[in-house]
Length: 78
Image 1 (cartoon, rainbow, N blue to C red):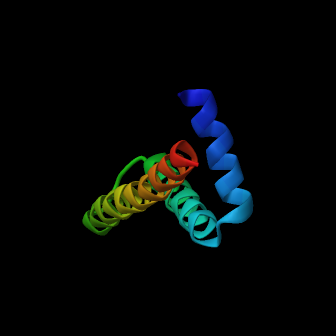
Image 2 (cartoon, one colour):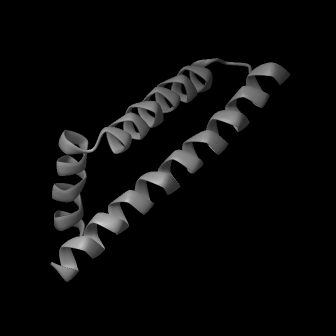
């Protein structure tokens, strides 16, 4: 189902405000995590921030997946 899901994700980005907000927030966290990993040394604060970012990203991904699954189920019953 990867092709169907990619199309559905794109549709959600265009039509679902919550999904789009979650996606953008996830992308921002991803960029910040990449910035942290560019450092040659992570301070304890940086390590803590990286852990927090990973937790937030995972939560966002889970919520996006719930929206995707709900839309997929709605389409299947329609």
